[in-house]
Structures are given as C-alpha cells and as structure tokens.
Image 1 (tube, rainbow, N blue to C red):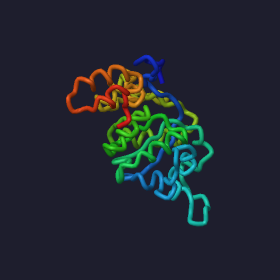
Image 2 (tube, helix red, strand yellow):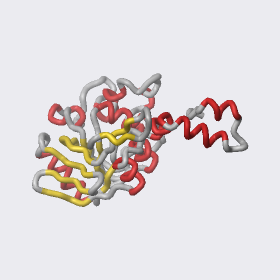
Image 3 (tube, rainbow, N blue to C red):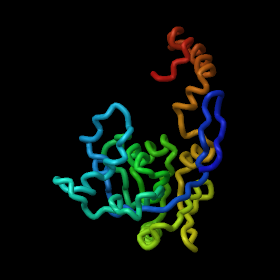
Image 4 (tube, helix red, strand yellow):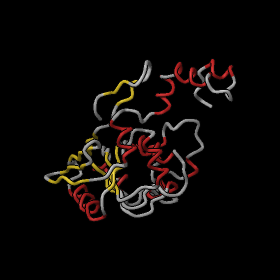
Length: 220
C-alpha cells in the first residue's frame, strides 16, 4: 500500500495505489461465500479470529483431517495476493467472506471476475479486486505454484500486475480504483471525520429531526 492520504480531521485513510507480496492460487469457478466462510462460523460478535476458518470445509474433512488445499500448504502461509478464477465470491452478500480472507492475510485478489457485492465488500476493507482474462489468470496461477516465494506487484493505479519477468494488463473497476487510489474507500471513517459538515447538511433538510442533525449522528 502507498502512503496515507488525509481525508479529514480524525481520519487518516491510506491510499491503496499498489499491493506487493507473494501469491496463493485458489482454483475453481463460482467459489461462493459459503465456501469462503461457512455459515456456522459467522456466529461471532466481531470478525476477529475468522481467518483460521477461511475455506474451512474445503480444507478439512468432517473429522478435521486436512485436505489438499493451498491454504493448508506451508509454502503459501505468508501469501498476501490471492489468484482466483471466475465469479469468485458469488452467493450471499455476507461481509464475513472478505473479512475472513483479510484476517488470513490477503491484501489483494486477482481473478477472472468477481460477484459485485463481494467486490464491494472487499473495497470497504481496502482490498483491490482486479480482473484479467482466463489465460492470463491461469498463467499467473501456474507461476505462483512454481514460485511460492515470488513477489507479485498489483498496481491498482496503473492497472498492471507484475510477476517474475512478466507484466500484464488488468482491469480495476473505475469507482473502485478511484476510491482506493484517493484514499476514500473507508466511508465510515470519512463520515466520522466530517461530522460537522454532515450535521450542517442535515440541519438544512426539512425532513431530518433537529435532534439528530445537531448530534452529527452518522450511524443511522
């Protein structure tokens, strides 16, 4: 990630111009949010600790015996860039899915395509979801398999991914790219840092209760 971008009196949201790190390939189309984080692990007050349950049912048998899955492999344990295939994150809108991946250690995801709500939930955490064609993704997954310690550079601003001696063009949805690069992806922090402006705007609206406007509440 690049240096922070100041966005208000109390918020200091980092811009995400690029992400660098080693990769982990997770193959398969239509990997849904229930596969990313099974529903039984969502009965938590906070998201803390969800990382250990990422892909749990794909990683372990009913007897908790490890299956063949990249998240179980020692060579990928420090990976921060996940490389996936088509329609990743489909299914429910649960925000627990990207929360689990972030807590496992993922900072960026490169794939063929993403479910829209999943991509939006990733953006809310400052995690880029960048896309490329199937051949490009397959080549990158194969390279990661062969080079688990190899660095991958995801340039969000420039829309490229570089690995080894290869640089490929990728796509970043424009609103996502702007939010990440300009450091305006954390909307909750932005609202908290602009309470006075929000309250002033609210007071000018005839349908807002004066008590709420005066409090500068941003959580309704």
